[in-house]
Image (tube, rainbow, N blue to C red; front, side, top):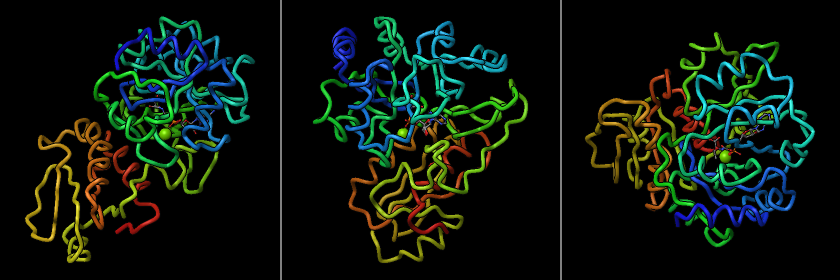
Amino acid sequence: MNNIEQAAEFLKQEDVVAIPTETVYGLAGSAYSEKAIKKIFEVKNRPFYNPLIVHIKSIDDLAKIATNIPPLAYKLADAFWPGPLTMVLDKQDCISDLVTGGKSTVAVRLPGHPVTLELLNQLDFPLVAPSANPFNYLSPTSAHHVEEQLGDKIPYILDGGNCEKGVESTIIGFKNNTPILFRLGALSMEDIEEVAGELTVLNTSKNTPDAPGMLLKHYSPTTKFCLSDNIEQSIEQYRNKRIGLITFNSTVNSTSVFYQIALSNKNDLKEAASNLFSTLHNLDKMNLDVIIAERFPDNGLGKTINDRLQRAASDSTIL
Ligand code: TXA
Ligand code: MG
């Protein structure tokens, strides 16, 4: 379904709609409607303490949502919006506790997808939109993924094709005008640091409700998942099992592997990131005993890919 007017109509009636963004599909509702926000949490089965991102249509709208905005936030907005950067700022009074999980801060981004920008332009309110997946499952990167996961629970899925970035936005906050990384995402740390100087990384060794995107178990497939520093050894360990293998660019010659896929034959971390969730969705449907993924290079979007793989693996073996 690709009728923007129809999607706008549901949203004006305080209902929820799945929307395309450049990162992943979101489950959107009016940021000013208690009814819509409650439905988002209900449909996703998401705990109320996990706050939502507000999606705006222009940088001018930022001051309607947030206050005490540091100059650096505007500098970053100018550099990266529309795009996959979310900034956590002090909230304006119009943003309800339901959006922020009771916090005094709000997460805001200006998404870089033409369909959703057109939709936002037809509305006189911003949209809150978490990823359109059941809580803790893989984020959707196509309208088809949303249909499979939430199709029977929502009235409309606005189809904007496959998501270009394929992983969620990078989230940062500020302390005394210095940037703090809350969640690795589709914008690399290096790109942000070029504009903002060095990023401090929030300590995420614990399950901190400060940025639940950092919850240890998150983004998981239902199949047993293993992040491996030595794939030959991992394959050997699961020798008599039905193995699915995810690599960066290499092919492994082993009869033990039932199915294997390289996320980027041309060695491109951006391409690999954009294929990550769709690959996990596909492998999760193949009745595998285990999915083994190799660890990616620890730079650029490789860091984001490793973060998502680590979370997918968090209640199974990390070799
Ligand atoms: O790319 C994206 O960001 C996608 C698309 C749809 O825009 N959205 C997304 O939303 O990933 P969600 O709800 O799956 O993740 C939002 C993350 C959560 O980890 C939440 O904890 C964090 O944003 N967050 C929201 N408000 C926050 C706040 N005030 N302080 C700290 N973290 C916050
Ligand atoms: Mg999510």
